[in-house]
Length: 163
Image 1 (cartoon, one colour):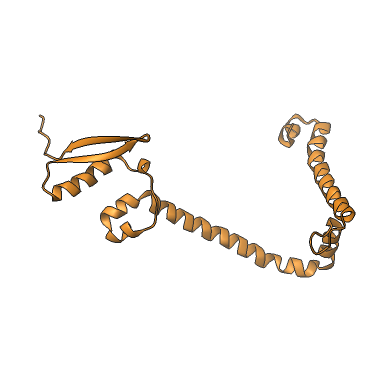
Image 2: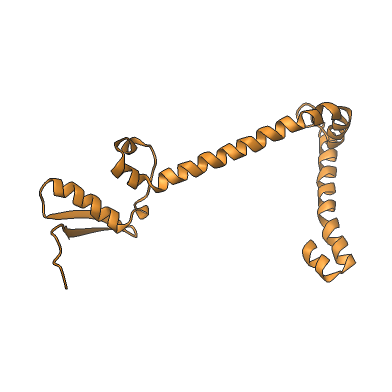
């Protein structure tokens, strides 16, 4: 039973158990850490016991909490910057084919795209551009559909008008 279901049902013992279980697990981990560090005589500079860490936090609380705002600002600004850069890179990766057709410098971008990102229409138009310049009326394209190679002939002649 989770804390949310315990609150909805109004069952006080279940709510207490939902809160106490994680606290008891945390206490057991801290106790095992404290005992193992002392029994194994691990040097304090390698792994200090939790009681020493808590004592140092209490002693140096003014220094620690005065620097907390700087650290939080650095963490949040780094996260925001990574979100913006990641969003911009995802747009570049998705629209790499469109960029290659419109901007010659985009062909040099080291962005990897899989063939599954390309639509058949884009493949046909790219093949048409390349072969129309060579004055061919038929182009042969090699595509991959679900991992199997496919070869198709595409006619670049003007389709008849139906009406």
